[in-house]
Length: 262
Ligand code: SLL
Image 1 (cartoon, helix red, strand yellow):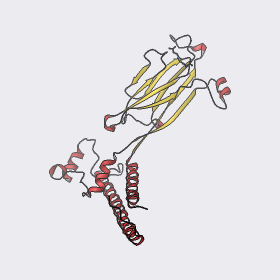
Image 2 (tube, rainbow, N blue to C red):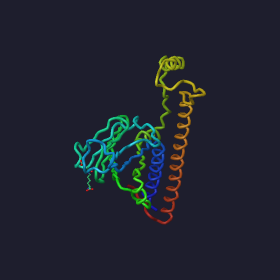
Image 3 (cartoon, rainbow, N blue to C red):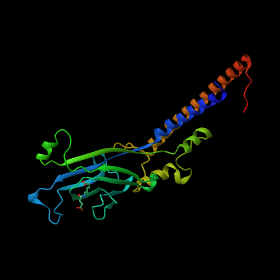
Image 4 (cartoon, rainbow, N blue to C red):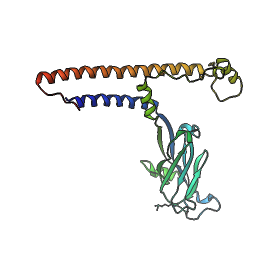
């Protein structure tokens, strides 16, 4: 083993550590996207639809269990087949859905636009619109004129930038208080502010609300403790490396190999 590969080893370990840390701080957001289609009953055709259209369908993006996702998903653009007039459909608010009628299946391009705070580029998904039953019971489903649902689950991950973490780890700076000092940030001021109507979390937790600035503080303390542990791990690795380098230098000396200095 050479001196170079030893230090590479350490930097690999350090970057793995940072990867783990950033993975811990990644934000995961789940959604469900897909389509539902039903054959149009020839005896009850909705008025004014194209005579060639055989199905009613809708394509959608929604939260798992219909959970609200509009706090992170700003708008959705559905790009339909060019046989549709105004094939680019933009939906700015939930339900993120396009309802249509048609005769054919095609790939829908679904572009997700996130809220500006996410600082993320739009992301594209593809969905194959399914009108006809498929799978083992396709025939039965067709006879029973069942709705055809084709759905996918997707997880969007917003990465926490690695740099701030790296700085935090390497600078050894004391943890920054989250609330300012002085009158504005004083306990009294916080409590007063919280008696007014506000989106801020309350100073103390209560039976119906376990989240508070106090619990947030505890959580921050725990995070700072975890960071200290990681810093200690990095330090230990450095010490181990130094020891190995010493052994290596001695080995080189005893074997008569000249020490490479860069
Ligand atoms: C197919 N490649 O041939 C596909 C194209 C197009 C679907 C499907 C109706 C559009 C309209 C419609 O269903 N288009 O009439 O406005 O199967």
